[in-house]
Image: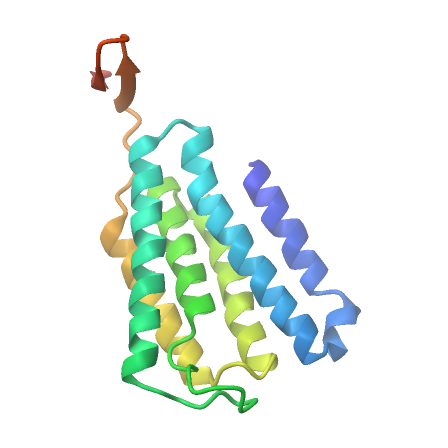
Length: 179
């Protein structure tokens, strides 16, 4: 519930009149904040809940989307709209954001996933408005991130828990099944 409130407040801030005439720098700041908030939520939520499998899946999903996106930039050098370099395609900000959002939705359901996807969409829009990407860079990043989140994340099963343990001589993982 707290995550929903944080994301809702973030979205409300983005809808204020200040953003109507936003500069390129404001849009870039918006995309950085949105991306970072989603990654923190995707990694932090399972850690706070001691959901070690969820944390591992979130790391894999976000990491895979980021690495594939960076690799594609070398394969398909595309000039950015602002002319700053030839690393426009696909949008890594958007890929990372959608991977985090898809992970949250797949793992914890639509009540968490819907606001996360709204923030990811705002990240994508801000990349285009900030003249860092073309619309197709953002669309490709969104598809890549969404695929990564859906393929590498499973729904949380509250009936099975995996817990780390240590007794001074070693350690391991204990599994508890609730039925």
